[in-house]
Length: 243
Image 1 (cartoon, rainbow, N blue to C red):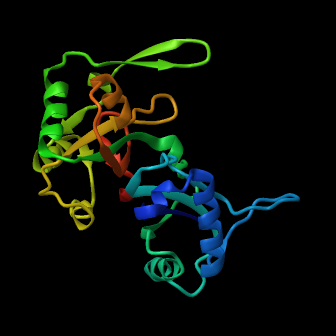
Image 2: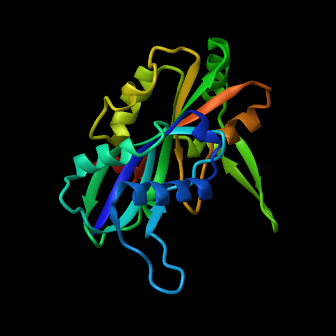
């Protein structure tokens, strides 16, 4: 049995790296009594995979974790959400638990885009970044590898960017399918004007991060990044929360 969990990672947990987060979930599922499936061999481990590791220092309300289960036991998926969260620390919380077909591809292989909220110290910083993005015909980021340098045009790889959440949400709704449009509003202040929102292309081949835009922008500023959601699909994106 396969399941996909959506979870939030908030507060001081932003400083926990990916491997530590994986170990956290392993212990959390054991404490909760969830009947996880284990790999075979001399060192069996719980079968799980994340859609995309979150960078240290970032928070998120839209993380996805695929797990394999032997059974749900006597509880429903909604009851399991409550049980798991009761054993957690209040900063990592499961918000969705969906049973998925056995032949469903892992979320990490489906990932094609991710949405973000970037908070600044003041409104002008948000407006300046939006103006820079809007007026630029191309925004070239140089990605250096061990063997070469790759030019990435962020103007093409960031389909949506706005300092107005309402505009962002309306634009996103034209190219994305999201089954619960009020989910984000439970966690973020959509009236806060010190923010920009963006949709970035993502995945194993090309993974665009908000920091890339600020590197090209060049001005020193303080900001905090929160990942809002992840999507599959090419041009018509589908939130992974749809299942």
